Image (tube, rainbow, N blue to C red):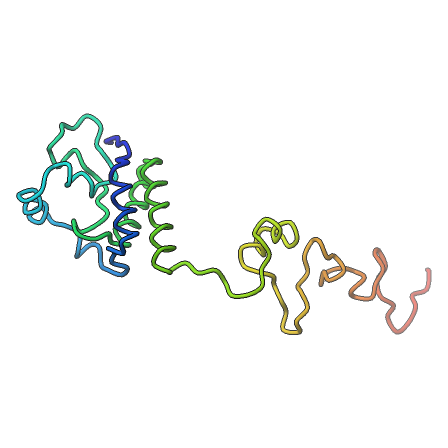
Length: 186
């Protein structure tokens, strides 16, 4: 398996394109990925350094100014494609190229934030840290859980609302509820 190192100049180039809104949010990357002919046409009018700016990975051991040197393309050589960045994340994760995976994931988060695909839920929420301390990590991410009646659901911090607790069912711990007749000792 080939090993790759992260192309930091390509990451900076992608961030600059995302900030300039040179992105395609929804595409079929299998159909729009640059073909060998597209890459050859690009190289006729651009330098190898410009070609390198479109690839997140640099193949270790491959000679410069060859296509084998560059991997993990994230756009169509004009714009950043969201689906291409997602493909980079998955491919890098599959082959355990952690630096490229993390860089592609950060690019995806930046792209989503910049284009407005990531929006915070509407509501009056506390800061994440305060929410986690108050409600637990799941509720900090999703907001407080509320029943139809408007009361908060049971949480470890509020054991009286536990639907399985004996006190809620009218029993004391260790005692069964009295049925119509008292049991007599044998």
